[in-house]
Image 1: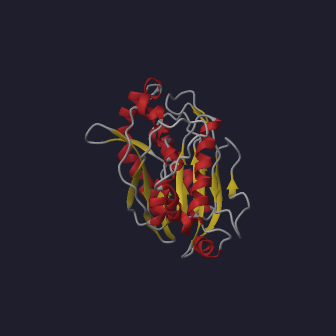
Image 2: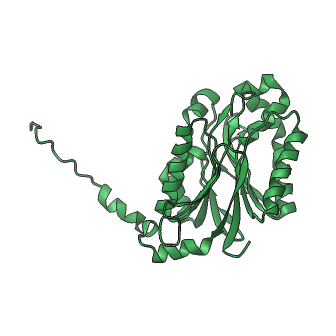
Length: 304
């Protein structure tokens, strides 16, 4: 890890039917150890990968949306302690996907915890909820957008559907984030592509890096993450010195694995100053043209 660079590892994670918390902890420890061993300094896990924990409570719980949410809360302290220890032990930053957490008022929010090598942790809540979350699971939207400081620069988190709404990422980028982390969980190919297209659009318009980490694989034991489709990837600006399609690296579809990329944050600063286009700089100019839109009159319309 350098002052303005970092190797990122994005997980394509297959939630398994594991019989105990110890088995889950052993698996996650192995994954983190593997990525750290490859020199990664920033690790990203997927949205709702924590639902793997519900298998340890038995099939009755894992196959029930309300029961899985209720029993999962028992493991939140263990979940946080595990990732805090792993971040310290391996001197890495970890975006721990997301965990649907029950708040004191009884609501559940989808929180993505961010752990530092010093043992600190913060979180970003998902702000835009899908129909499944709202109508079937009754998970509520969060409230605040955050950015996180690291040794190599500022990063921010857009949880899955959030990545499809440009003003959220823009606010974080304007607060200094040059890397957007997108933990995702999508059951269909269309869902995966919606998030991917959103990620690539955010990288294009903000001239920044975007890292997507999805759940993958079939999980018939679970009601919440029964089907998972996707590929981890790192997306970039589309300009001089970057890939012509804006895809720095992309994993094998639906195969559990880490996907690695070396990111130079100095290149983000360079392209914003020397690029063929200046999407980041020119963002405010669009408002000059949409504040008072003129609607042309249809040729066949009759005046009152």
